[in-house]
Length: 189
Image (tube, rainbow, N blue to C red; front, side):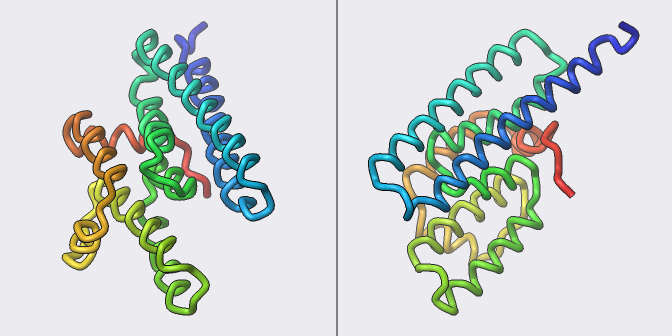
């Protein structure tokens, strides 16, 4: 017992990260296979996944109130879950990159989307929605946005993303939100 719970905390964190990754992958797979599913099957599966995320979020809340050593690590996952549940972000990949504090990969994804919309591989509506999500995530990660990006956010603001902005603003300073979003979430090489 010389670890004073460090190994147990590490194992719990790893299990929680794996559960979050599994649920985010499930959402991403669902979006990718949407065309293969009928509308009822898609909606039911999405609803079940969001219910699982909600239950996972409830578990995180319980753990956070009882184990202070896990608070910072689990808060980042909780923020990502809240974004998914609130449906502020509809793109699981954006949620994952936001939770793992990967602004570089978010910017790379944005560049790929710019290219895809120009060649007609991505519709303008999907592009606008995903660009909004990425720019909102980048802003919450403390990244500097260009005047053009800020203008795009203002012109295309949605009620859902605005609500996410308000909810995360209630968490405290930008530094705290950044810490919550990034801490304890394993970065894949």
